[in-house]
Length: 231
Image (cartoon, rainbow, N blue to C red; front, side):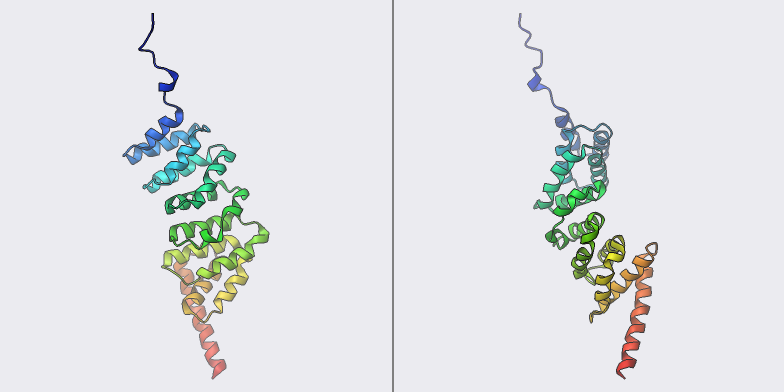
């Protein structure tokens, strides 16, 4: 006698299916719990689902949990899935992939941090690329990276400038030449930002506003000295 009520294997959802369904919940707290579970009990089939969700997840807390969950998965599988996202047409996918790579901290990701990402038109992508690149750059590449980042001195609002300065703090002494060159710029905003960054490299525990105040005084002293030399 046949048993038509018995489900076939093809009807049984996979672990990846269940996770995808859970991450599709309209409730952010539910999505956080699902991502937490995926990180607590990692499985290879979770990796593509987590990466897929990162590309369009609107909630910051959920995105942070997704990244944490990815850091708990097999590193090879995660790198293989995350690095291609750097070329995504979606800014959120690029930014989240960069953020995830900054947490994994695997030097094999360094070659994937391109000039295009460092100068991305989307400021969230660009600032995340600065931080990630500064953390991953090999010692021999750090000076060249600093020169590349120096193109952004003096640009954008204070929070963006602070992000650039913090990338230089990570680069440390490797970024001094680029900072010094920018500090000699004829453009006030560039000069001020470079001087503030110089202060933060030497005093990384100081806040950005305090560094800017120090930089303003230093710039004023330099301008006065230059004026006296010309008089």
